[in-house]
Image (cartoon, rainbow, N blue to C red; front, top):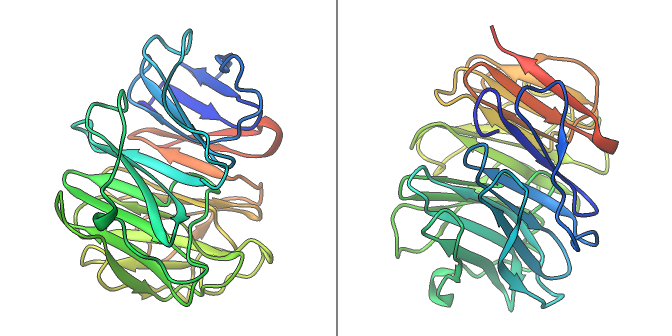
Amino acid sequence: MANDSVAWASGTNGTVLITSHGNSWKDVSIKDAESLDFRDIHAFDDKNALVMNSGNGLSIYRTSDGGSNWTLVFHEADSNLFFDGMDFAEGGIGYAYGDPIDGRMALIESIDFGKHWNWINEKFRPVLDSAEASYAASGSGIKVMDDQLWIATSGGKKSHVYNRLREFSQLIPNETPLFSEAGAGIFSLAFWNMNEGVIVGGSYIDSTDASSNCAITNDGGKTWELITENNPRGYRSCVASKADGSLLLAVGRTGSDYSINKGKTWVANGDEGYYSCAIKNRSGWAVGRNGKMAKLILQ
């Protein structure tokens, strides 16, 4: 979401959509990108946005006119590249990350709202454990805030949230209590200040399994508390937060849940399945299979 009235969405077959009121959506899909699966989109406003594909190389497109025209701002044809998500701080510094290449996390940076991108120096890209990677379910396994960066990984021996405190410093792995194995782990994270955040996930193989699917932090991701009572009701592929953390929304195949106490307890919000979500001050959106969308009106 760009703001309370403007929202963007992306998906398979090069699909990109935009709405200014929610009653109808305008198709601004990218010509000649029908083969790409746009797993993540980042909108700055109603004119400027970026979309990123996952799988079979990396292509990032940018628009500055509301989707009428798109420019390919980064491209790597290497079929071994699989990118998982991107995010930006308010000042225009952003990162996109992906599964490891030669054992190191794939990580690129932009300092101008995504107009140009460069690879992060190898020495600042962490070496991952065997089988450790990330999930591109909703593009929300990464968060950038001021000079801090958080990235979630799973699939190895442990699920981690990597944290970098300042520019030109190493990403430090912090263990989390979410169970890690093929198809299970952290799928999404959200931070609303430098200290408080939440991770959600579980197992997409068993979407009804509600164990080990949510944890919260109060120290910037160094330590995590597993939520075992009144937690989300199953696998959750995305979590979104209001700017102050006063409302969290988590969505997945088996439904959605919300929290008004910063993730300590969750309340069922329906059984409709959605894959991704976003919240602003007075509204939110959730998107699902075959173009299913729902608008959340906040009181």
